[in-house]
Image (cartoon, rainbow, N blue to C red; front, top):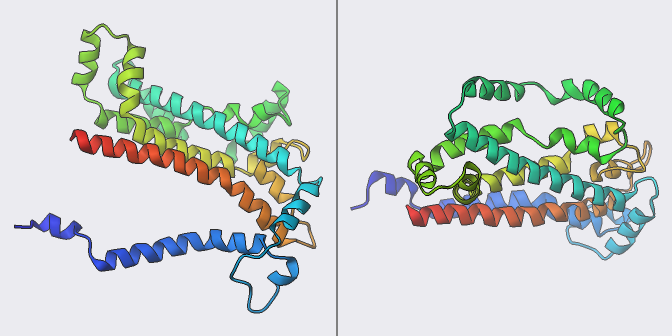
Length: 280
């Protein structure tokens, strides 16, 4: 006898149709980016526009590398460094603080958590001018420290990991570790961190994407000689002329690290969920 809940979640042919349509709509912008990046500028302006990839990608990307104003390779390397460091720091500090707020008892815990949550309500743009002045005082203008250090800790990451840790880790498990003589850090490393793997994967993926796509702050604090990728891409467009084949070729290359990170963290997310399902 199939229950009402089982009938509700049972897959129907319409579900597969909807999923296929959603997948095609999601993939199409990336596909068309590749199409434009592999076509010449004259072919892009054809009517109707081309729908299949061409053979001009090498020439288009070669012009990107020859564009001294864009400094593409430098921007790509800087974005990889900054995004990797920020992601690793946010995951570690978020999981540590989340575990602390969820399972450790100390005075002022709720007030401190409230203060962290309140900072999430302040628009980032309001802090640009004070932060810019602080970077000038520290001598970090046009330095990767300026686009890395202020973002090593995320209020959203702390709150997210705290919510997940409070549900995914039982108090009995923590007490069992203490009875075995494990220190607080040992409990975090061997018990808490493996249990937080799905949430850490989500947080790492979101953080890497946000940092990789960040434009306003790097544009304000970095010079054209030391850009991140998004700043570098902005210099491929000119006031009166834009070579879209060149821009889309560079964008296609700049998307590759995001895809690789998505595959890595996606496997961690799925692996953690399947592990939890097997245990349950």
